[in-house]
Image 1 (cartoon, rainbow, N blue to C red):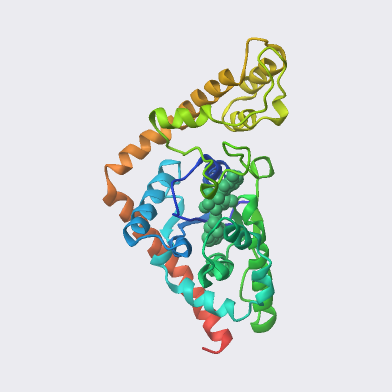
Image 2 (image 1 turned 45 degrees about the horizontal axis):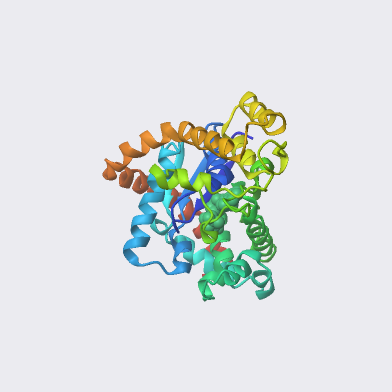
Length: 324
Ligand code: ADP
Ligand code: TRP
């Protein structure tokens, strides 16, 4: 697969959680190490759909950049930038919007879900898949690593690219989603999909008593102590599996089935310790980056400069093709 253009974005709409890491960031980081041509960005225009305060938007965009770099994104290997530093994407959004039937957007689950969770229906939130399509198509992306919840947005993107090409000529690259089925949906504290909108997250860089308390609050069934527990239907095991070795996982599963002195409290403690160990190197890198904000800003600026070269070349072809 070497030599493909890989692209993904993450919204700076809150603190990153381990669902974001295992669902998307880890794949994105692994791909940069295979010699692919990777573009990753902070989707700050997207985050405006929930209308954060200006200072919060700026700070979170920066914070997510730090967190992604700390997680292993390497700016020597990947082009890393803030979405709004390449405003060409908005021109492409408009052009795609004019090709986009209302029905295509009306069918999007993510929009309906967000309304069901109390978000206000604004035009930006409704039209968001067109902006996401522009993000992807502007950079001629082949593969888009995302969690399963974004699959439908990738289908919208492909549909718009095909419509564009049919109408104006073969200009846009048709992308594919890259979804790791093993980690398609990471469960949250309550067993539903982990999401910042559901208040059930384990933060990527959580600290102190508060984070331990979260682990201890993971919902399990009510198998009494001494009875065998079912490892196949337990969020603790599902989360442990993401971080532990095969042997460690097998040991936990054995304890579930066979150890009468092992209860959910022990399992939660094991998971908590594994989490601290797994993310320790990233925490260290994060502390260093936080102490050097100028370095982070320079990385983002350099990324934007490189991204903009590709964006401008695509827009020149697109503008020409549509008659602008
Ligand atoms: P949230 O649902 O917390 O708002 P985002 O929608 O910002 O998260 O997701 C950012 C990225 O992380 C997306 O690629 C998304 O698919 C992935 N992701 C988020 N939550 C999960 C999860 N629980 N399981 C798998 N992937 C996830
Ligand atoms: N919509 C994605 C999310 O909420 C973020 C995103 C915006 C994105 N533009 C993108 C992901 C382009 C992949 C490619 O998670």
